[in-house]
Image (cartoon, rainbow, N blue to C red):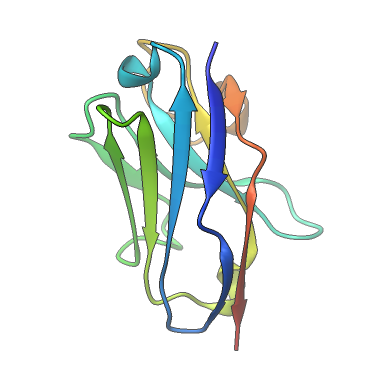
Length: 125
């Protein structure tokens, strides 16, 4: 079982930066692919970024490529999402998600087994 707790959301002006953190509990964290998703009001949850278990491979949605960076620290059981050059269209609730140990990354919501409660990111114009 893996429990996830996000933090770091808030209100920022367009062009600004935020760093989200996702603290995970559970011994299988270091062998699990992790992902960040987001959901804006009235829209479906969408893929943002993912990272494999070792942190050597990362994947991004086209809309955030070059602006967002996903990373992980397995010693701290934490995954991060550094968000730079934020735009108003990045406004959403951001969720951290984990796959089962040994699974590879995915951009599909239903491929993930564990979810955090979400953290709100609001970008003002």
